[in-house]
Image (cartoon, rainbow, N blue to C red):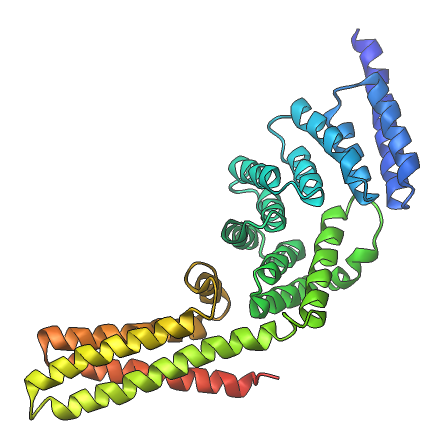
Length: 345
């Protein structure tokens, strides 16, 4: 039997090699025929099944890719590549819940696998699972910081979440690492299938943000919203804290009452501005802490100012007021300086 099996395996390998060469030339139907021939002799050949699913995906035949990918997953239940093919097919078919479940499976299989993390991130983003996708994309970058595809996926996920500042930075880093990323969407075949999909999706998102009147100004609106939150909050806190500090030596009791009222007013002002920025706490700020730490810290500093006023009301003393004035001034100047370097167009 071993002597018979070896030629059979060699024949299967030959079919796979020819299929890959044909796929790279964009001859997907012929590649599929080669893989069908390989599978005729080896019906449970996981590599052939996975490649056939990828060929169908490359040819925009997601409905045909899905059952083949399912067979590949059954043939190699612990492998990541078949699951990635299944996840892509499910996303293309709009089966969001199943796609998200597949993305979760990939994350569980490869917590320290950069390919698994960035692939799962792209699938979860396509399935509209924002924060898990962003977390996985960052993990992919951490595991493979010199891989252009990791940054490309981070840009894709950020763009889907309308974190355009982060998306631009990530895409720029991907281009720095691999200038061919910009042309990836024109590459046929299955070797660069993921990179082509990511580049195409990112381009479509960029076009949507530019052409859709409802989203055309999304980038400047997001920047203006954060700047407005910090500047309004810092201005309110600075004026209120100075008034409390002036009143404190002559009327300590009324100054504490004023501090509480000012803190409530500042908290209300911040809440109203934050309500205009969906996902600020769960998505925007975690992303900013990685991409623009200065702006993120300015937001946190302004949020701390009302707390310092309440602290003064509770314990007295000059230090809460000094700290409140300091954080308000620093946060305001930090945002003004940033706006000067990156004016909103």
